Length: 172
Image 1 (tube, rainbow, N blue to C red):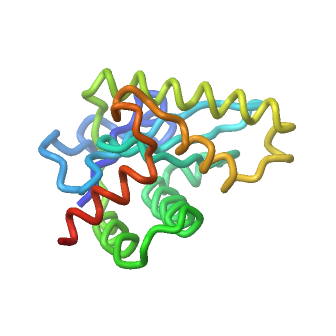
Image 2 (image 1 turned 135 degrees about the horizontal axis):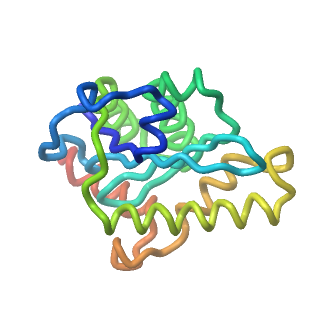
């Protein structure tokens, strides 16, 4: 099971009440819990998802409220596309995707993770602006660029190679 830790703004948009949230527990996913943050670009709702242990991330742009209320489907679709685009081995992708079949929602608890995701959102916002906005963006390219940024949380290791290493270690 995968836990998606949502910001208060995203939980409100999704219509989640405190009773709908799972109790926080140890991460059962190889990459840890996923953090989901709602942000706006050109007055359109966008979501950035990031894995706790590797900061592997992807965005979903110009999403509707109905799509947000089905966040687990939005998450799995985005994750599947990211794994294909970044060239993960099929057994790694399958293993990670299988862990994400069941999703629960929780509040964010790691302030360091929140800071890292906020920085990724700033970068995404800058790249969206510099590349012509939502109409001119190649989503796979944006996600790839976000995953090539070295971050202090991961000791400046890039997200995709770190995630591949974590997934390979789990399958051994």
